[in-house]
Image 1 (cartoon, rainbow, N blue to C red):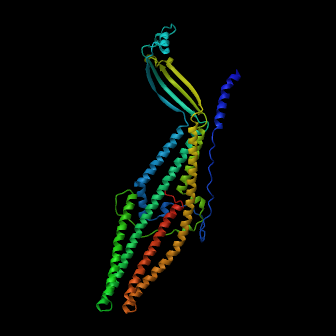
Image 2 (image 1 turned 135 degrees about the vertical axis):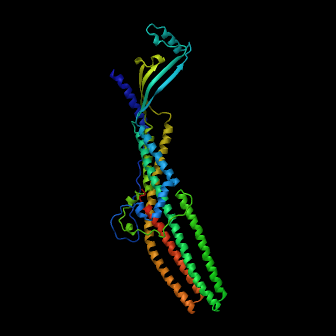
Image 3 (image 1 turned 30 degrees about the horizontal axis):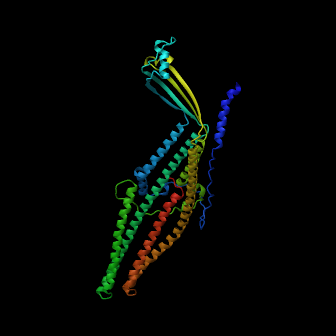
Length: 482
């Protein structure tokens, strides 16, 4: 007797062992290449450890901070990303319920008409002739109804971790979507900041042309006075007029660029075109941050793009494990309990109580090819996720190192360019005096004006590039946007 009782257990174990022999192995998560130390040409004196930065302390311009708030309120891309986070959260909550038994409560009404030459028809007719049943137990042989009211439950026992890994995958995808939202927010903020400082740069460029045009007009008055007394020819007057017109054209072109940038900012902030409030100051380099000891590994793994790819990798690994677990037998437990009767009059009687317990073990056989392809796809997705993760780490490191190097170079270049502008400012005064006293000709006067405006524009260009570099530094250092 004992040997007979053990046979089902033996055969079940044998089936599981045979099934597990053909189950492939999940690839272990690879480690990213070791992150080297920063290679910066010159060392900066240490001033404590870098502990991170946030948006409101790095960017202090009130007008820019207001634009950031408008982005969060109205930018459609940001709103779409928030909805994707909500979707990922719903997937996570759904995956948690898959570990629990399902429960349905309801009622079912059906009816059958059996032929006289069917087993059910003959059986019902014969049952009604039995002397062991009451009138209420007799079956309507013309049309046999069936009433059921109760609860049904089904539960897949997660013996191999399939559902658990699906839940883990959903959890990591939710975390990845949250980091993705931060990444979109950071990208939008850096885009807005760059456009904002583009606008300020255009304002400054416009002022340079306007100021130099006013200076040129003074020089032009000198030239006209000189022509009246015969000291210069009409050629000098015409050349000054040509240069004046050139600068006036540049002024009008800058105004067009200002309109274009305003429109781009309005689009990102999700509003119809309007004037953009702005200051007159570009973003200075925060040397206090650069004088800190930077833990490169910690900074890189605080960036939302890197963290998002890390969670995506973890999710893909869990998906591969879930695909592997699908090769094992599926174990289901079911139960039904309620009232069941073939007549409405007896449905609510205690004798109509009925129940059923059901257990099942299903081994995949002919669909193993499909399961194998699903597993191979999951494994490839894990490899792709790792490559994206490694790529984001490499990109983050090179970006940080490049920006820090450029920041130091810009610092030196700006000092030199500022001195150049000062020299040329002095040169304008000298050239005017020399021209009046006859020691310089009008060509030298024109060239001095050109050199000054070119130097001022070059200085502004470097200041603008330095500002854009510092905007990118916020992202490269994993700046917090919350």
